[in-house]
Image (cartoon, rainbow, N blue to C red; front, side, top):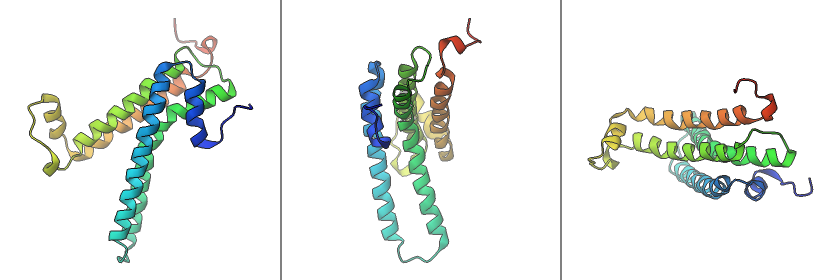
Length: 176
């Protein structure tokens, strides 16, 4: 417990240091950097938006600002979740099934990819460049609201991986 971390900012290097999975170590660096960039962009965009709407006295703007913060948190939380799960597991010595750290890292990478796919789907028409790619063309063809679906599904996969692989191998009764 002497090596224990303090809070989220201490959990990230702790998870990277304590895991034996190189996949989790790589994800730890990439996921933490991506979360930092997203948090910075959301914070700066919120400051600009507040400055532009400072003179408006409507409650609608206050409500939409709070939704903006929640959306930013929804993008950062699943990025950090694999790191926080791994840090907690190593700190507490929780029993997990084989490959727990590695599979959580894969889930984190999946969430990062899903954020990109969601941004492609929800890109405004004036920012979409003509493409001959069938995949990108199909993503552009989806309604912009559908851009939320890939990140939500990937976040659910991250949490499913955690709940599926926690506990010892001996407690797993449904595998042959």
